[in-house]
Amino acid sequence: MKLNIPDEISHFLITKIENIRYLTNFSGEEGFLIYDKQKFILLVDGRFTTQAKEEVYKDIEVVGYKPPFVDFIFENYSIEKLGFEDTILFSLYNKLREKFELIPLSEVVEKERIVKRENEIKHINEAQKIAEISFLETLKSIKENVTEIELNAELEYQMRKRGGEKNAFDFIILFGERGALPHGKPSNRKLKNGDIIIFDFGTVVDGYHSDCTRMVTFGKITEEAEKVIKIVEEAQKIGIDGIREGVGVVDLDKKVREYIKEKGYGEFFNHSLGHGVGLEIHEKPYLSPRGEGELKTGMVVTIEPGIYLPGKFGVRIEDLLVVEKDGARDLTRIDKVFKI
Image 1 (cartoon, rainbow, N blue to C red):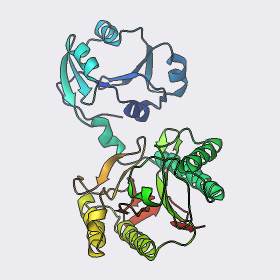
Image 2 (tube, rainbow, N blue to C red):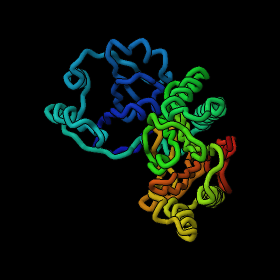
Image 3 (cartoon, rainbow, N blue to C red):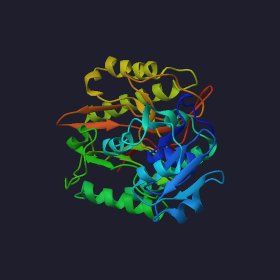
């Protein structure tokens, strides 16, 4: 792969671990990647040398180095001007600037990652399958007085035993009034009759994430809750139906947001419509009022409108979709609302 970097830069230092994974297939938690416009050189310390040589693509050169890293590359590579990712740690930046002329670069690799390759979509799809099967199994544990934390633990267990590498993020499993916290953390709150439950969950396969949110009603819920669930279901349908190549991410967010506003709940939809998913759980494109650009075939995005009523409940429904030329392929296969 050729990266688009300015001519005056002789070498580009890549430090973000997700970008290293994308370019090399190395899954270790620490390493440095140097691009000299001809090839990629992965530098790892002794903990990861064998792993790197086993994992990386055949055209990647693996070099074992002895810390300190900055001294090693200064002594072993003829670097004229060094480009670096502008998200680098300040401590590393300070060490680099003592040795090199530096030029910051923004999102060079991230721009390549926005449109997914077929093998990436395959990994995301597999993660989604594991997450869904695990969620359906976890539903069997729902009973009166079970806690949010207990369901969280059960869902994680189900995912791990089916091959999920780790949680895609901290699960959001919330009962009743706690569902009005869009990113609340599971607690010892006990389930009671009439609660609605938000399940926001995902797992990871070969470094790639899944993301899904489903609603569960326990016993008889209020008419208002029934009404809001239907509004969110319809809002999500509008969002999914609006996906196709060339659609502006801001326009799609606006379309769904206006529908929820028309129904009287605009002020209670307080996050973006969706986001890209891949090696990170949140990545470009961002489907929000501040998003940029248009949807392209091969992007993988979420559509997840929500309504959150403080002191009462929250509703969010989220699917994971692959953008296609004339629509979307939904990787989410399970029902949106479950009644227990």
